[in-house]
Image 1 (cartoon, rainbow, N blue to C red):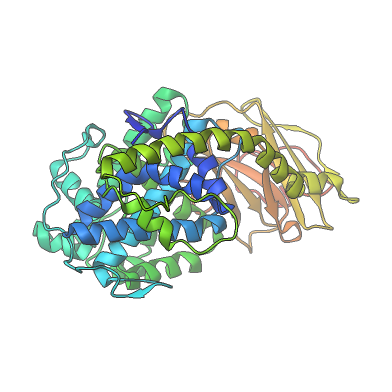
Image 2 (tube, rainbow, N blue to C red; image 1 turned 120 degrees about the horizontal axis):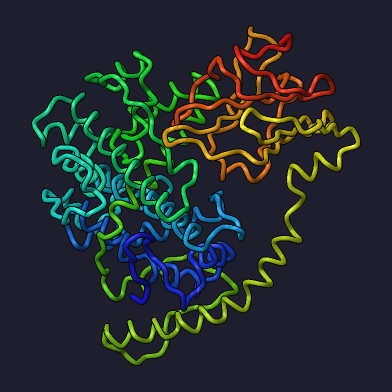
Length: 483
């Protein structure tokens, strides 16, 4: 495989288009781009299949099903990738998406020998899970205790649920969940430090929740005790069974949008950290696997086929060499179409929400107000489209462990504030959008722990009204429309 795994960034090959470009072209039905995407990433996906499943044949089929699922799901996947992002950040985003998808597919196959929409009895041998998770401990996991590393590796590389790893480790179920949670949080902290050293720290990657109380013996007891959010790190590793996951996600949804925001932020940080931590685990698949996958893709009338239809039989080595040569040609061709693709996307994509607000006949733009740390805060809203955005400039970076959190503040204290997300100063260089202005009175900003808060702290950093009125910032105490 031409791509290499660098110490910090995972898959990258400067000779080919980036992973996000290959995935985008694949979404358009380009099988050549999909083959290049496969060649660049498959050693990580197949290593996961081989680690979880006992049978080589089962692992090969699982890897094939991962890429067939990726082909089906990619067009509907909303990845946080823009052309303005650094190429390695874009590739890391796509790589994490693929590894998370692969883990979901492989663990589901290992547990049920089935996949939604594909039926049952999918594995040729159905030999079950591997009994031995023997991958060498990565340097990125050095901060974990031996017990934490065993729990995390059994969950990620072994595909175990917390119930199963509790049995294998000989610990209570509550302890097993705590080991996974605390081990994942240690990886989140290590990932945050690595990103900070490279100067690419982002909000979701830098999430470090405060240490919580111990977990309970059952997931239902955790939910009833209000500790469902603590299980985001466990859910990120697919270490809850289907019923447990449904129970936790239902409890999070019932607690309102701010809890959902915190859940998604923590889940994303955990997945980024775990895929980063185990990026050194790779294994090559059978040489003919790509051809098998391409033959199983849905029929199409257009596109480039990489399958050789002549009657000459080649050795696996010759086939691999020919495939790589063709992939290089595809890479050059893809580079030529990227500019046209980007232009088409720009033409086909409508105006952004800030642009819609700015163009609205009833747009209201507040005067910029000073935030407490010397920055400025400004909102623009439109009642006609019931939406708006807030723009912040000049914010100072916060000390480690803290983050800015934006809120839609209610008109009075009979309602709850709605979180707009947790951000670093660098994250707030672009407008933050929102809907539902008639139900709220202002946008506010607080300084919270990096994991965020369920509701604003009493010390509101600054706020701006959503409609004409006193635009001045308000400091100290819980914010109300009356000040």
